[in-house]
Length: 380
Image (cartoon, rainbow, N blue to C red; front, side, top):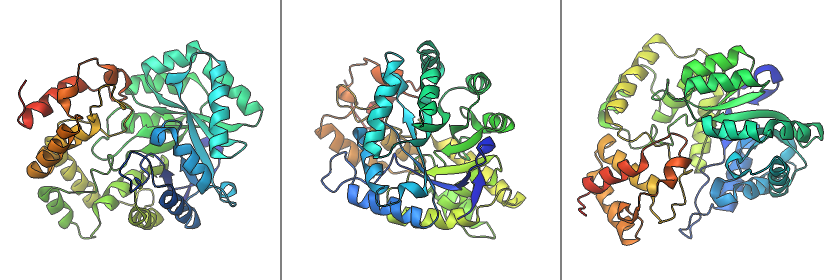
């Protein structure tokens, strides 16, 4: 494992971090995570050099922190830097910061977290955080030893990002970045700006929710096949992010042990500035092909869920994109029929738009649901 300095903190963090938003599902078929397998995967990653673990209050139906707490028992907590996030959208008063942090520490079975981030910050939630003086409350928690460093995860425009960066002495920021979304939200511009201020850069969605690693379209695979050095699609994606020297750590939301093993291999030699001009040209070519195909820029963060009418929003969007990106017409229609049988298809949408207020990408979700409904052959 390679390690990189995390901005002005001076801490050495593993180039690969374990993002705990996409832990393996339980075999029961419900939305819960397979705790035993998740613990095994997290511990395997730590045993092989990963020292940055990232979770949040809302992951896995608010059970994600419990799972991480179990994984970090038996001495594993002392071997890692642990990050979790303040659920700003749930705060109603400054005292709520302590309330949720206390609950999170209990779930994580620890007396402190190394990094506490304002979660999913955009213009609206940033204004709310300022109004409630959330940073003052976080600083008090830091003074009491409950957290060590303060940061924020971000989902808005680069102009909003710069404003937030300039407003506080942040230790780190967590941004969305991959070779398709290189100038999306904070993007490369925001990354370089924050790094110039000494803020540590941690990256989420390096493989766009796995879409850059799975079911690769033939024309994209043909691009990779032209490379002198053969790499898996996941390797191309992770190496592109870690090619940037400003990036300290890339979070991979690993859902299987095979993914853990592959990502550990990749992170071992994905050094800064290690891609050649030829490599970067191939990545640009693949990026153009993907951008031409993607219809809905959803990363399946699931912040829009649960829908009050049980619409499986991210599943519908995934099927819609798969239809265009991967040509998976039959498979998409088959799973859509399954959603319809479960009353989880767009027909159940009442256009309340509650989901649109929660979406960090600010997607017109109801309009996209209508397009999906039309694509898969439904009429009112």
